[in-house]
Image (cartoon, rainbow over all chains, first blue to last red; front, side, top):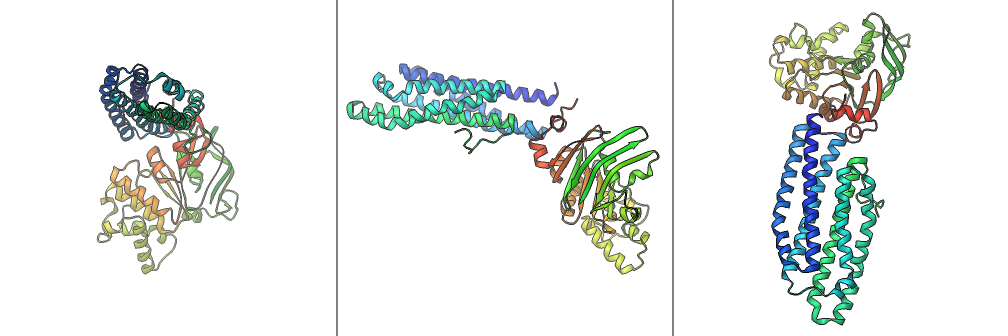
Length: 221
Length: 249
């Protein structure tokens, strides 16, 4: 293995750690939402600092690689993709942190009926799976798996679009729970953004492996 | 326009260039890259028939410069060809004469006697080669007293003095420090407004910086020719990618 390949391998390892950290944050947020587990929500806030530190470390590694190795072709595309993936992951970590903050503000367990009617549970499970799949796609350089993200995101978008109506109906029927319902609406919006970040990451994986730019195209619609 | 069609070159039994077909648009820079011995310098030298000087060389195929076949055109005057197709080598090779006389040399050899014309042309060429500011007060000084980077720009000025259409550069900056290299690269960028330039380089970043098109040669074959951006971002051939990313083995 050449020195350059060793550096690329080391960088990949760091990005994989970032994927694991962010995936863990999201999975914890999902669990904490179901069980209103405030200790777990606190843990998410603490781990967020590690996510931020990892983002800075990867950014620095990419800067060093660009300055020292002058990458071209697939190596250049890889570094450009990693810079964007890193940023997408950090934003996903922020979303998990935002959900955790909502949970810390909530006093009581969420109404099961509210969770069922909005389909937030299914939505969150799929978002966590999307992060899992996109992490595997990156690690295995599997563009077919990366493309599966676009399909999975359709469900997240659909739940998000339906949320206004389902939340409005719920509030009319349960005015005492309106604050809780609005928290859920806000959380649905956040989970929808997790889907967008996963899609962005999928586009970057396809860009660096196949040199195809899907951003702003209708191919992934 | 420079065009080669099914160009083959043999050094005795050795088949050094294999069926090379490519074209270089006018007023553009084409970088020729590839590992040592791949044929890129040999190809460069076919463009002004420098290989004719090597014993045992045999060439078939066509090389057209501005539509004229430089090998098959019976009226082709080699001296006129080399005046039109100037060459700059890896190692600066100033003559042991003054700076002025180095640049004036080509004109004098071509029979120009008008001293005011020669003076004008020397100044113009030194300006084109971005050297005038540094030498205008010491034109009578020996060219050998110049730095390596200045000597190389002097050689470029010497090539430009006879007003060629095409400039061939064989690793023109490989022996220079980064500042001189940067001046040569900047110069290439300026010169392409008026000249068609082909440059052989082992420096991938230099090829990426200075050229509009890049041709990758390997084992005497032209593997890939494309716009430089395409070659360095998304080469079509795996061999090209392996070479430019340093994974050639």
